[in-house]
Structure formats: C-alpha cells, structure tokens
Amino acid sequence: MVVIPVAVFVLVFLLTRPLFTKVTRRPVQEPEQKEETQTEEILDTDTAVVKAASDDMKGAPGWNVSDSGWWYLNDDMTTFTGGWKTIDGQRYYFKDSGYMATGWVNTGTVKDSYFDSYGILDTSKQQKLVALTYDDGPSANTDKVLDALEKYGAKATFFVVGMQADYYTSQLQREYDLGMEIGNHSYTHPWLNQLTPDEIDEELGHDDDVISKVTGSAPALVRPTGGGISANVIESINRPLIQWDVDTLDWEHLDADQTYDRAMRLVQDGSIILMHDLFAPSADCADRMISSLQEAGYKLVTVSELAEAYGYDLEPGGQYYAFYPGGCEENRTKQQGLDEIYDA
Image 1 (cartoon, one colour):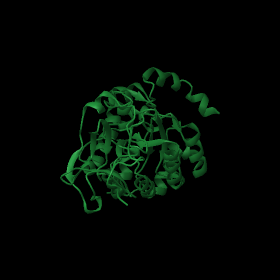
Image 2 (spheres, helix red, strand yellow):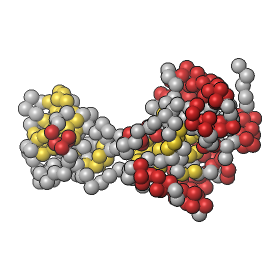
Image 3 (cartoon, one colour):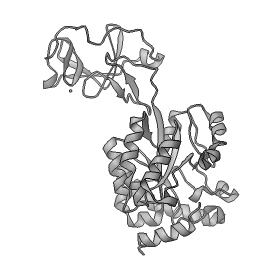
Image 4 (cartoon, helix red, strand yellow):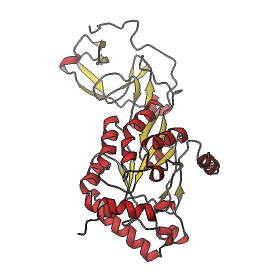
C-alpha cells in the first residue's frame, strides 16, 4: 500500500479542493400532581421495567429521595426503571438507574425531553438539534474531535476520504465504535462534478470498500467533494447528497476562533455545519464549539438522526442543505437566503 503523507494530501487538497435522608412519606416538595400536557402516546403507554431495588435505594414503600434524586419503592422492594409509569394518576419517566427523570432526558427518541423538578414533562421546552459534519479525514487531528464528542456525549457525521482512511484506520474504527455516522466523500477527493459516470462509480466504490472493511457496510450518505453537482453526479450517485447551510470556511482561514465564531453566528435549529477534521484548527475548536452549542440548547446528532427527527425522507439523488423543523417549504425558503448570510 502506498502511504500518502498528510502534508502532501493537504497541499494537494488546498490546491484542488472544490470550493445523586430518605423520605418515607410523600413530602410537600415531592413530585406533585399537575395538569398534564403529554402526548397521547406517552399517556397511554407504561414502559418502565420493574427491578429489585439496589442497596442505595432502600426505604419505605412509596416515594423516597436522596442526593441523587427521587425513586419509587414498591411493597415488594422493587423499583421502576427505564421508562414511563403512572403513579397515583400522574405520569413519570424513570431513568435506567431507577431515579425519576428531571431536566433534559432522552426517552428513546432523537430529541431529549424536559422534565421539571417534580418530574412532569414540560412540552413547552423543545430541544434544538444540529448536525456537525467533518470532511476529508480521518487524519492525525480526528482523535481530538472524537475526544470532544465523547466528552460531551455528542454525535457527528464524518464524510471520509478513502486514501486517508487507508492510513488512519484506527481513527475510522473509533468513529464507528463511538456511534458516529460515516459518509462517503470519495477515495482521492477529485471534483466529482468533473468526472464521468464510470469515474464517479470508481471513486465512490473504492471509498465504500475501505469504509465497509471497518463498518461492515457501505455508507448510506454521500457528500460531493466541494458540494459540486452535475448531471453525472446526480444520476450516478443513487444515495442522498448531503450539503450544508453553515460553512465555517475552516479550510480557507485555518483559524480556530474564526471557525468557532462563524458556526455559532450562523447556526439555527436543523442546521448542518461543515468543517474538516483534516485541519488542526478545526479540531482545536471542537471542545469549545460542542460545549457552547449544548449550552445554547442544542443536541448534537448525526445527519440521519436530524432528518428523522424533523420528518424528512432522504431520497436517492436528493440534495439536502439543512433539516429545519418547519419542513421542506421552510427549508427551501431559508435556503434561498444562505448566500446573502454568507456574504455578511
């Protein structure tokens, strides 16, 4: 196998890239009765699993509390875990630990749900979603991005270049092991929109082969190099084509602060943010960006999760720049103004 040094790839790329006192009775501050606003699906289904109470969750039957939170103890010394349960006419969600959910908690859907201090679902609070995408790796910088994603329990989508993955196989393996989404970004990173159908097939096929050796299957998504589209690209690539609505221009300025500032200024609910794990500055700002996005109310998900959460069907040959919660019409309307935003 011929190993292509990263420095050589970067040079070629820059020159050719397409631009918790237990309580034994129900106290005043315990989960109280509230008028519910849950959906019909949540109201009708008890999904919590009954398990023997752990040593740190003993007490009298009924509600108990500790520094770790509230739990409900049944007469047979069992607790509820991992799902919804109706108690005295009120709906609660219990985490896998057996504690009643409060704050932002994932209940099995892409979006997390918000529960107040009484354990009541507050549907007025809606979590925002965003998809971070990284192109042109894996590289020596990829682990730094993965460290940040793992630290904050976030997800991202990596559009992989095959000749990089041939060398940085452990990074590709780690992406997969951490549950990141992996997409096809060609094998040698040519301008796909300047290739013949056979050449496009060869590029993507070679990349599929490299990736599938690690993941066990070919990627479902493709990002055309540089976002370039042609009739041959659309006709030859029988997979969804993923573009972006937030371009950090990290490849151009190679500055961590500019990458961070541009992403935070342009992001909105449903955005797809473009970055490159090939470049050190982009990896350098990952921790700060991920933390800031979460503090701003965003959950970082994969592209496919984002599309699913907001009801988009990914069609072969379709181009997708973002998945705004308003639906396709709003998506198209907002997309028309992206060039003006980027020029600002």
